[in-house]
Length: 199
Image (cartoon, rainbow, N blue to C red; front, side):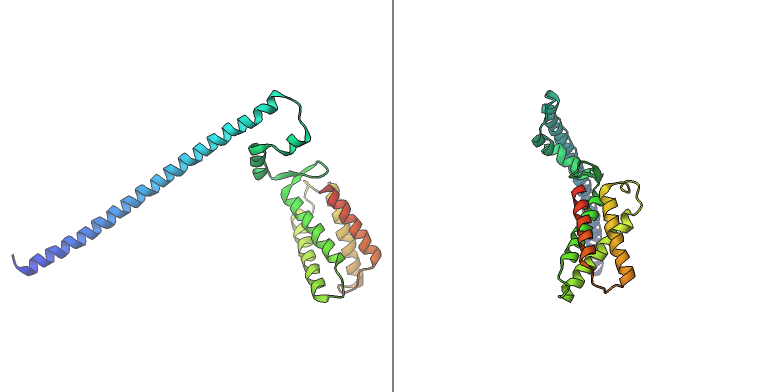
């Protein structure tokens, strides 16, 4: 056999070894992927089993005695935490259950509008920033919740709507750069305080 033929056959062996190595590496990565899926699946199953067992253990004292106090209502342990994470509703200060997204949006309107109304209008740059933040939160609130049947009859919605309407009514008559009179400002702040009581 001539040296050139040996060299070519060695080169062919090296190429095929690389191909085999690549194929073997692909099989290893596929096996590792299925192993990872298996481990993650087993981990998820064992976590769920642990949480179910833990939830059952947490609820047993509640079944044994019907008495509950305010401390137990606020501290439900793991079960209460899991429920609050996945529950789209939240209990308000007044005891009503409303959508979390609504409460977050309404609280943001109350906060930003109050900051804007309490801001000193002499510092124009800071006043504009707080006014723009209030406008944006009001816009998002109205886009998301105006006319929504789940909240339209709630006290907080009615009072916030009243505050927003009185603010919009003033600026539509007086113009966007008119200073807000103290009586309208105090009326709006009073409405914000009422709304906050219901949130």
